[in-house]
Amino acid sequence: MKKIITFIHGFCMALADSVPGVSGGTIAFLLGFYDRFVDSLDDLISGTKEKRIAALKYLIKLGIGWAIGFCLAVLILANVFETHIYQISSLFMGFIVFAIPIVIIEEKGCLKEKLSRIFFILIGIALVSAITYFNPVGGGNGMDLSHPGIGMYLYVFVCGAVAICAMILPGISGSTLLLIFGIYLPIITAIKDILHLQLHSLPIVIVFGIGVLTGIVAIIKIIRAALEKHRAATVFLIIGLMIGSLYAITMGPTTLKNPQDALSLHTFNILFFLIGGAVIWGLQLLKFFSEKPEKAKQSEKEKAD
Image (cartoon, rainbow, N blue to C red; front, side, top):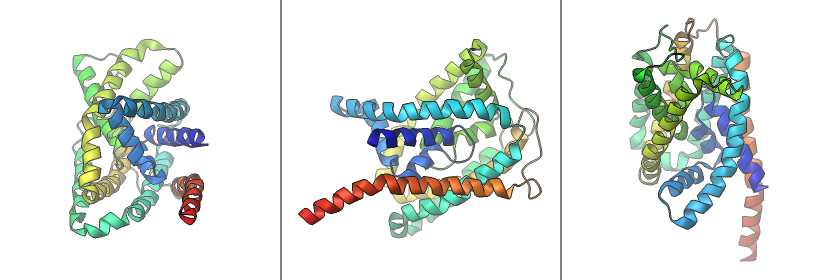
């Protein structure tokens, strides 16, 4: 049962990571396995032999679910993203708006104790808003990755490193950052081509992957230390990043290869917004049912003692 639950966790993370909106880290946070996920990555990088083996076993099970979910998402998203941008953006809005109160409820204990750290919310909002507003490739300068030069390879490498940091950190999603940086749809399309055995985009995807691995190594210890020593400030920052990403999603249509108007009240789709909320609450139900057997066992042990 645990293997199936871990597979589902990875699958859900992949669906989040593949679309702008909620990061895979946020899904891990909502489903209650974020600390184990971060600890496993850190143990794999610098743990003892025993910890590395345990971490590797866990991450492989998680990774299988992630890989299947990501491939399915990519095969679908590349076809529908640009043609249904406003419906999808509304869906992402629903993910975030409904996820924020869940994060607050989950972490209310540490947040109440360190309410003075609430200003980190403003820092998170400002950070995402600034990245979105000053994005050098937004507003119609869509990225063309078909004939990359050295500068483009370097740009894609940096984008991969930054995006994976966002994917691991609950808050703004890495895909949202890729959308802001103007390479979300090109990377999704490149990966889709490779899945169809069209390998002309393989070099740019490899460089992107190297950037992702570099970002994991660079950020994981920082995240682990922040959660252990400054959890309240980190959670407030995460909430701010999530709020700020609403602006990023609003401006997302302007970063497409064929730029469209930013999301507005006229183009906002309430049905897809509510579907996004239903997905988030569905994940909470999944967490509840996956934790129920463990809580029952713990309760039996306490009664026996």
